[in-house]
Image (cartoon, rainbow, N blue to C red; front, top):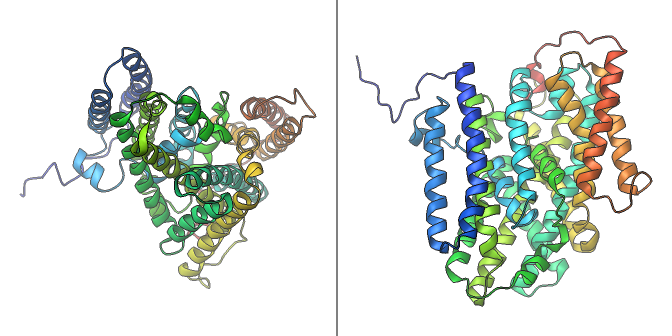
Length: 473
């Protein structure tokens, strides 16, 4: 009998409660250490190269320990097969450095959003067999109407957030290449379109990984060349969508990036719960490393090389975020909003072509907005985040966490959260100065209360079957 090679063959997958408990404890330790340790060490005045080396060793060490603790597979196979860190998760995690502000607390929102999806809604999505969140709602509550409505909200929120990130990338490109804002926005949109057209979602998510590496390289370069303090310049570049209360923005971006269908082509680890959880863990750890460890260094940059590194970091991070969010919008439009397609008469190439055209259309809409209306596009981040959190999060939480919830309650929660979010954004309710995070969280609470009440006073939905094969790509 041939001897098993532990470095090239996967060990048996484990799904016991003990393995999940070990992984959850490890995730909590990772978040605490990856956020607090960088703050403490940076305040002690440790040299930049030492911090970069320590961060690299820490993240690699946590990856090794996490792979063993979760019982997923041996580390080399785990990394080389691309399942250790899903591309969409890496795109969003690295993009938080530019999209939500390098220094400060908003990165906690992205981390919370990733873990919320990993440990609460991720398992529910896997059990349902649905490849997207709108599809999950349609299957969980047996309601095609709810699926279509949630897809519309998701597409609108993703395009709004994607346009804001694209406008942010245009600001950095305009400063680095001496372009006008429309020219820079057109260039940024063209880059995203060229990554989406040839290879579709797979090439776009791989481009997100490449952009994430650019973010890390630019941030590491800033550590070695910092010789002057210019926080005002950094805050000026980050000003369009940097807010101190953007926790809900992070949650919304995480939810949008997780709404990618076709698990086998876009998110290879979605059918393996251990892979999905550990991938989201490292996305969260990477977010903490960038926000808390690299942020203080970026505010102390100077010289030509530092300027180039900083512009590369901001541009790559914003493009990664915009690509992931606009990809989510394209998937919602081309997959969840389309009528039922008979696979016997519609080839797979046609179905994927529809998704590709929808994604390119979302990129074009965001690019036109960022080029012609840059100020409005940059200001769309808070309203779009409030819309996603207020309207999408209530039915998702009800569907994932409460077996008593039914279709009437889910539709009511979506409608109530949407109405409350729009009223708060418009200023008709609450204070006109209320930020996107506050509006989204208040609307989410309203939607949860309305949905729970409607579910209690209406008939419980019947148990729904798994999605039909015709509903997949």
